[in-house]
Image 1: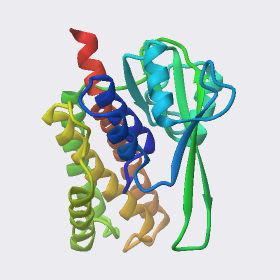
Image 2: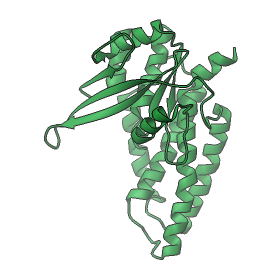
Image 3: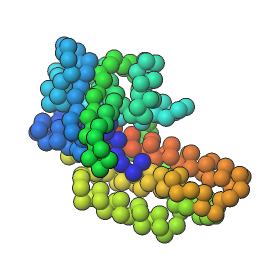
Length: 260
C-alpha cells in the first residue's frame, strides 16, 4: 500500500468534478497521474472505449451523484454491494469505483508495455451494472481514525517484540521518505474533502506502508515457524484496518452528502 489506488484517484477527483470544484481537464490529469492514458469501456450508449472526460460527463448525465471506492480482498468484500459478477471482477483487480445514483461500477484493467525503466501504462475501466445497496464494511471517518491509531500501536509493539524487519528506524525512515515524496508530488485528496478525511487517509497510508515494509523485508529476527506465524497474525488485521480507513476517507464526501 505504498501507492494510492487508481480507484481512489478516480473517485476523489471525480467527486471534485461532480461538485464543480475542479475543471474536467484538471480532474483527468490528476486521475491519469503517471499513466499514459485511461479509457472507459462498456459505457451505456457507447459502442467503443471513450476517454475519461467524455466518460465522466456521461456518468453524470446517467445520474451519478458521487463516486465511491471499493478495495476488496479475499474474504473481505470491502465497499462492494454486488452483483456477484461485478464483485468477482473487483476482487481480481483489488479495487473498483461505484457510481452512486447510476447503478454502475468501474473496474480497472492495467496494460503495461515497454522496457524496464520506460514502461508505458494504459488503463481500461470496465463499466458494469452494480446493485444499489449499502457498501460492505465501510466505517465512518471517526471509527476509521480510532481503529488506525490502535492498529498502528498494536502492530508496532508486536513486530518490535518479534524483531521483524519493518518495525524499526529503517522502516520509519522509509515511511517518512515516502510521505515526503507524496507531499511534494500530489495532493492527498482532491478539493472538497474535509480535513479529517485527509488526516485519516495519510495515517492509513502510513500504516499500509508499515505493513508492506514488514511483509517485503524478509523475516528479520523471526526465525521460528511460530514467530513467522505470529507476524502474519499481527499484519493481517492491520492491513484490513488500513484498507477500511482508505475507503472511509475516499467515500467521506459521498457519505456526508447522504446524511444531509
